[in-house]
Length: 327
Image 1 (cartoon, rainbow, N blue to C red):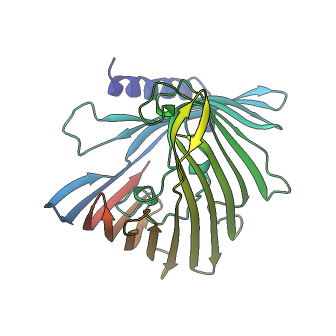
Image 2: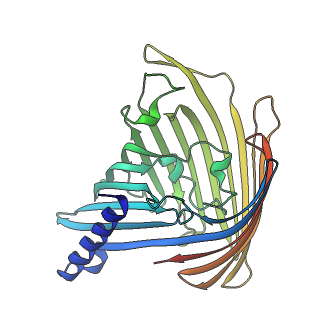
């Protein structure tokens, strides 16, 4: 059974549940298509492409088990509309778990807590200016156990991800030895800046995909203006011997600043700058400008320009116009 068939079956199951009288909010088929026409001017070559930007299709749901306990699940795939292969599905978050007064526990393929900790500070998420082009730590791993606490005083929340050593990405520098990893975060406020006008987090990865990472993020909303910042230090482990990790001596440090301003209820402009020290080489940099126009709550037109310096030993410029449709 190919991925398309599996997803079609999942959608059919969701429809069956709904028709059987299950409450609508318990099972949901959802997704979005985000496609752009973009031109990339790179040192090696120039090209124009119709680019799919993390388009996706998923099914998620929850079931009330009584006594304050709820079962939850999610199965999500990325859909690459620009892929040459007809099998253009790629696994995203796929997990099952329980929620209650204790918080939420889930197992499966999931974003790590360090990745979750970024909130909405990345104004060019999934596009050429995405922070993952320069910063390590934007991981979604196959064998994870996640715990997220309830919110304390409706403000603070703790999250922890354990990555099993059976995960293929826990191999270090191609060596046969693999180790478990831990990703944790402490978050304050509201990541979406809707219920509260601020968000802040500190996060730490220990031996996740061979990296130790410290990250701090802040995001505030003042009227129509949103301002964000992130600082990060990352350190790759070079070798492992007798299960004792030996860290590399070189540490890379970087920062990101972002801003978005809503001119009208529908139109917003935004910008973002990112810098990462690259050892004895020149710093890695990315500068982006863009605008979003909401035709409706589910439909958005956008344009962007990103200039990246010394990325993969080259400079490039990317200009794109796109549309995003959610459902």
